[in-house]
Length: 217
Image (cartoon, rainbow, N blue to C red; front, side):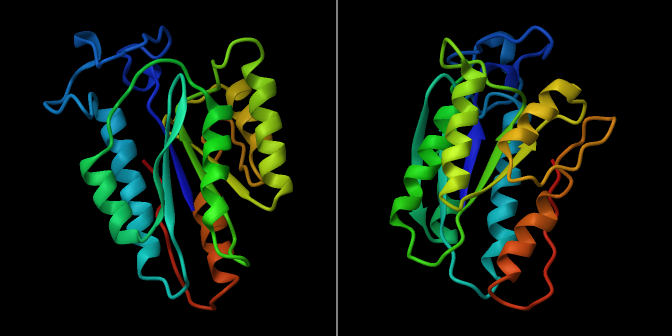
């Protein structure tokens, strides 16, 4: 599994309707003592990512996790490695960046980490974000859709998950178009309630054991 973490400015902006870049965790965006975390919203995102790893850690199937951070640019912060090493990375090395939202870059970099995945494994991409892409310049929506198309064509399961609850319908519809047809669209914008079911289903395809994962932030 590749966990893509949105570290863009809107994640920590005091007013999400008028997002700031929050680069270098500006004072206006900072509301926690640790400036690497910058704000409660980003801290919750990292905590949720750790909980996903912990929930899958004890499940009896071979698994590795990679971490991609994205804002204006995306980069593979941590390659595919064991759950314990991934949890250590999430605890000690995640730094908030601020900037735009390069969803296409996140998908591309996540897909790159799967190059070292052993044959036969199911590649799952958990895309944790607070909104639609705003980078790169030109057509960020179109580029993201193309990267998602290529990833899905290779067999990768894409599961977008919104940090926020009140998501505009246009944003939820777009993110559903990136996903592997696993959205549960509702009027209140909580469109990714099937994340838990989807992850569990694809893990259970290898081992028949009852398993529950709480997918909420």
